[in-house]
Structure formats: structure tokens, C-alpha cells
Length: 359
Ligand code: ASP
Image (cartoon, rainbow, N blue to C red):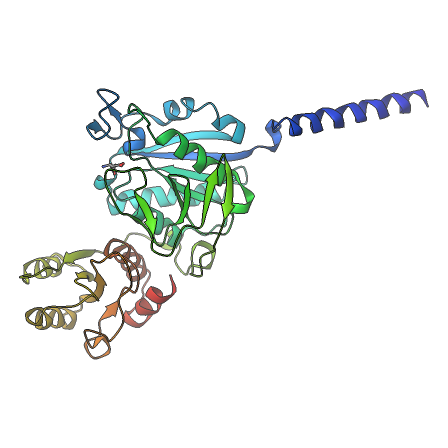
């Protein structure tokens, strides 16, 4: 009886202790989400000579452990582990880098001990990597890609808060099933439509369809969900991909000639993304060139160099007649990723066109 009385008090004491910890904002170590930070380089790992050099610096300098150690607040949000996958500026990313990173993410999402993944990345091609992962990773665990516009050595550096926000999104169970996300400048954006819009301001990333949500003081506020296929609903899977199909982008402008298109075809491309003017339009003199390449088995995909709106099928050009595909609202750089993944997965023109509507 006395023992029981004693045990009762002990339980009550423990309960009060736990409640006290939670009320005071502390989370017990066992309750914390396990987040892995995969570092790939970029400005978020950059260093400059002095604090006012926010644009003159070297990207990809600071190792991941130092990045994490520089933000003690991370430990309050999650149990964070770092892994250095690459140390490069993102303009140097290759298809091989995408595959290596994708395979690592795929292995980590299968690990029961991992709740979320953050990828630190240069901002130049961040949207391409994020979209690639959005297509090929089969998991509803939060995957967040983050960068910064200023190196950590600059006054008002943005990387620290961006990384803290990214980890808080990755640690949050409410983030599950939303597809791969990009966290920059207090916003949560979808990998499929996020675009880097300016190269010298901290509010560099936007989506023409709006942000998914915002992070304020570490808390996520959600506003929309993506009505497109991604991650778990995707037909693509990195585990079944050996390599990406060769696809390049040819940029259209007044006076454009056939040279770039023909060089890409000669190199063995399976598809060429035509970054067309306006509605993915094609100059009169270029129509026979592109039709000739299509007849030789190089899939022509019309996208637009204009960042907003989307390319309409059979408007501007008779796509049905020529066997061409349109990239819908995907930018040329995202259109390349989808074509490279879909063609490597055995998609023909018809299935590829369907994919551009659906992803
Ligand atoms: N050139 C850098 C990179 O993409 C720019 C940045 O990270 O902001 O790696």
C-alpha cells in the first residue's frame, strides 16, 4: 500500500516534469525528429574576404559540420546529423551528381531512423535538383532543399535562418506528402514550380502559382497543396534508373540559327528542349530544321524562355502534325529534367506529353 502510494507520487512527479519541459518549450531528446542534412556546397557554404563582400566570395568552402555547429538553435528543433555529399557550386552540377544525390536520398528515406532530409545547395541550379528529387524519390517524408544568397561571412547573411527554417520544415510531420520543397527567405515553395528570379537579392525565389506556405518564428503556416504528381504518386523511381537520358536546351532569339540544335543532335541527344520565344514559338526558317531532327528520332520539346504562363499545344505550331511535345508551365531547365527522367524510364512522345501535363 505504502509502495503503491510512493510509486503513484513518482509517476505524478515524472508527468509534471515532462509537462514542465514541454510547457517551457523544451522537447525531450527522444521526441525530437531525426533530420539528416546532406551538404552539396553553394553560397550557403561560401566564404568571402570581408563582411561587405556579399557578392564577391567563394562558394562551397565551409564543411557541413561547421555549418551545423554555427547554428546552435538547430538542436532545439531536431536531432541533426550532417553528411557532405559534394562541395561544389551548383552551376557545376552534372547528371551524375543528380544520380549520386538521388540515390543517397532514396537510401535515407528508407531508414526508419530518419524523419526528414535537408539538402544544402547552391541557388543557381537548386530548382533543377529539387524537381529531380520530386520526380524520383518514393517517400512522403519531408525533403527540403535550401540555399542562401549571401555567404555566411556577409553582414545580414541569410543562410543561418534559411537552414534553421529548412530543418524545422523537415522535422515537422505536417510537411509530409507535400512533395519536395524549397525553403528560402521565410517561404516554402514547391520544387515543381519554384524559380530563381534574381541573382542579387535575398528574395530570389518565387513561383508563379504562389508559395505553399511560410515559416515565421520557426512555425510553418500552410496555404496550398500541389495538384500534381510527385514523390509517392510519381511513375519514376531512382531505384529503377541507371542514368539520365541525354537532353539539352537550345535557346531561341531573333536571328537564331540551326547550329546548336544540330550539334546537340550530332552528340546523341534523345530530345532537345526548345527554349522558345513567347508561346514556345519557332522561327519560320527553323521549322524545317526542327522537323528534320524529329524525323531522325530527336524529340523536340517546345518550352518558353518567358518565366510565367505556359506553352499551349497546337498553338503557334501544329504539334500533333509534327510529333512535337510541349513542356506546359515547366521552365526549359525543369523541362530538361523531366525529359531526361521520362525518356530514361522508357516514355515515348505520347507518354512524355502526358507527363508534362501531370507533373
Ligand atoms: N553560384 C552559386 C551556386 O549556385 C550561387 C549560390 O549558391 O547562390 O552554387
